[in-house]
Image (cartoon, rainbow, N blue to C red; front, side, top):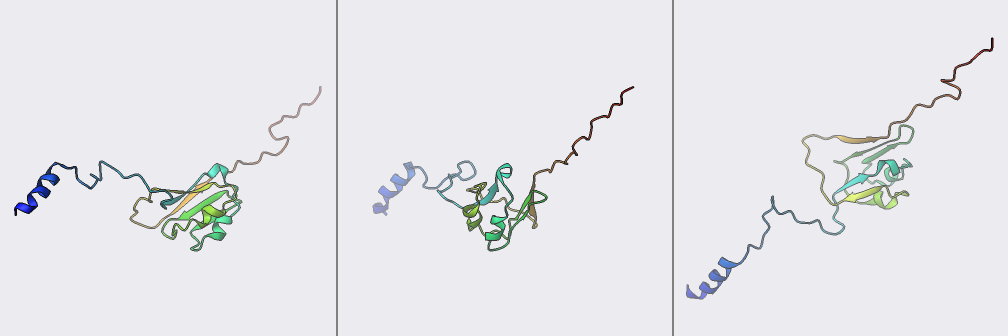
Length: 127
């Protein structure tokens, strides 16, 4: 029993080797895969990411200017991020929040209605 005494005394005065998780959060590792994020104003809706996705988790509608992702299908392979010509996709290091049911996230840029030329101009007639 006496041969363990130095180890017991040493461990009594050292800090714990683990983190106090809810209060001390570990910084993410370099290149940690978490979830796909999009910078929607920079996107040109070319659909390259949807074509490269091996699980068809991404859908792009160019006419509606919408981009959607099914997080349950996405396998975080980073193929869409690597092929994006505008580099508007990125892999965030934080994981997706847990969800109780499957859903698809839609991101849409509102399309402004086109106003015909001359609309809103009043015609004036001379007297």
